[in-house]
Amino acid sequence: MRIGILTAGGDCPGINATIRGVCKTAINYYGMEVYGIHNGFRGLLDDEVTPLTETSLGGLLTMGGTVLGTSRVKPFRRGKASAPENTPAALMRTIQKHGLDCLVCIGGNGTQKTAAKLAETGINVVMIPKTIDNDVWGTDISFGFDSAVSIATEAIDRLHSTASSHQRVMVIEVMGHKAGWIALHSGMAGGGDIILLPELPFNIHNIGDVIIERLKKGKPYSIVVVAEGIPTLNGKKAAQYIAEEIEYETGFETRETVLGYIQRGGSPTAFDRTLATRMGGHATELIAQGKFGRMVSLQGDDIVSVPLADVAGKLKLVTPDNDLIVQGRRMGVCFG
Image (spheres, rainbow, N blue to C red):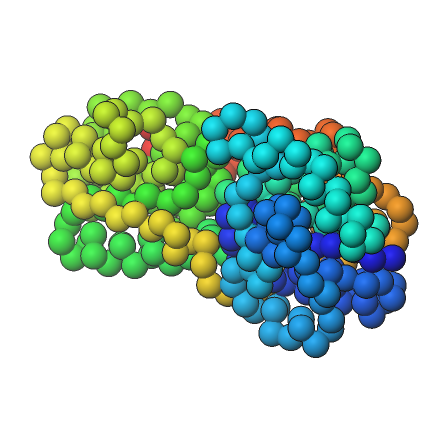
C-alpha cells in the first residue's frame, strides 16, 4: 500500500515522534510506501508531496515542531478565508496522482472535522489526535498535552520564589481557549492557590477575598493560574484583566506573566514520545487492516480507535466534578 501523511493546525511536541511511529511501522513491518505531504492540507492543494524513507526519519523522536510543516487551511470552509470552490476536487486529484491508498492526518479539532468530511467523500482516512489543549473528544489524552503541562508547571514553580521574595500576587496565563486542562493540571501540579478555567464561572470579589484571607493566615503571596480563554472585559488578555482586578480589589502588588507559545515548542516529554510512537504504530495497523474513517485513541492504558463520525465537532471540556477540582477544593484551592 501507499500512504500519505500530513500534519495540520498548530504545532506541538510529539508530532515528529508520531510521524516516525507511522512511517517506521509502515516501512519496516508492513512494507508500505510512505509519502509526506507538506504544509497540511495546503500541500494536497499545491501538490507538495515527497516520498519518505527510513533514512529521512532520523532524529525525529526528540525533535519539536513538525518536519512536514503545517498550515491552518481548511479545504471545506466557505466564506471568509475559504479555500477555492474546487478544493475537494483538487485534493482528490493530488491523492489520485500519487496513488495514495490512505491519508494519515495528524491534528486537532479542526483537522478532525476535515478528516471526517474527507471520509464522507470516500477518501480512506485515519486520524491521530494532537493538541496541547487536550480537548479532542474520544481520547483520554492527546500527545503534546503532557509536554505543555510540564513546561507550564516549571514556570509556576519558578514564580513561587519571586512571589515569595517580593510578597506579591503572581498571575500566570497558560493556553486553553475553550478548555482549561493545561491550567487545571499545571495549576495543581505547581501549587497554584487560585485556578481559573473557561468552563467554570468566577467572581472577582471572591478571588480578592481569598487573597486577603491568605494574608491574614500568614501567607503573604499568592499564585493565580488562568487559562487564556476565561471571560474578560473590554477585550483584555486574561492575565492582564485578572491582575488589574486583583490589585483593585486588594491593593496588593500584582504582576502577570503570559507563557504563550513557549508551551508548544521544544522537545516532547518521555510520556509524549511513547504515546506518539504507540499512536503512530496503531494508525498504521488500522491501515493494514483496512479500517478507515477512524481516529486513534488512548482509553485507559490501551490504544484503540473510534469512528471519526462519532467524535468530529465535539470538544472535551473540564467538568466541575473532575477529580482534580474536587481534590483541589478539599485542599483549599479556589476555582473562582
